[in-house]
Length: 314
Ligand SMILES: [Zn+2]
Image (tube, rainbow, N blue to C red; front, top):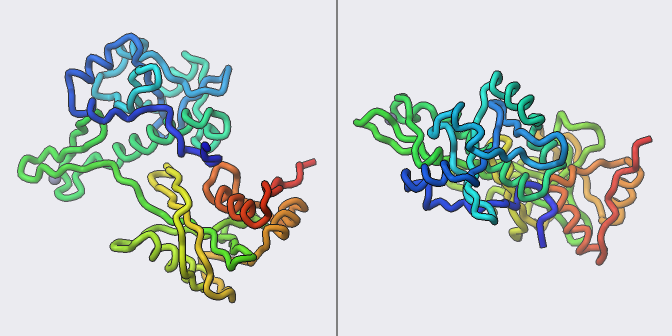
């Protein structure tokens, strides 16, 4: 079954072997079917205005305006067409948007419009280009780097250092904590009133995912967690994370709030349905794995699909 949350499907085979094959890659780039995605420096993605799809342009339309080295290879699609990604400057962005009747959307908006595999490709391209912008200098010696492997590696230009840098992803855990009957949701400072979600946080050095779940939950709400089971993961390119979802069992229930969580509570699945239905409580959007964790837990509790739609706005 396809995940209901965004970015976890990809319409491409990454075909990573091509990245090391410079002449083969140039052949793909020059082939008639080669396509490219266009992204802005701020990480928005160009989407066709007329229909909800990624603007995937034939590379041949852009070859006279950009260098081969400016394109990053993403992979090949089901029809074996190679896909690339290209980052546009602000001036270029306006020109190409007008040229192809496209608009630049932030990834969350794009994900709510696009087919799931397209949203995954947009997330992949955004994360890769974001890393490239932040890998321009060697983190070891400060010398400029040169991109290689079609944008998937950065090499330090200082021959005495010659460090290699690869795209990185920051791991975060996100968990639905439950006591068998109720689940624990909280609200972070800065969130809208009544908006509740599962608890999440970044991994620390030398920490396992399960340790991170137990530490984060205890730090945020003072609840001790015992067993925790992997649920699923979601690429979260804002800018470079992966959310690793867990279902975690609470060992005791009293809540002690921290600076990170301003309100928290235990809710049965039936209470969640009632409170969400009345507007007393607002859950994360369907885009997120947080929402998928809550829906999955409620489904198990209720033995049917939970009704967790907010009341329609009048
Ligand atoms: Zn260096």
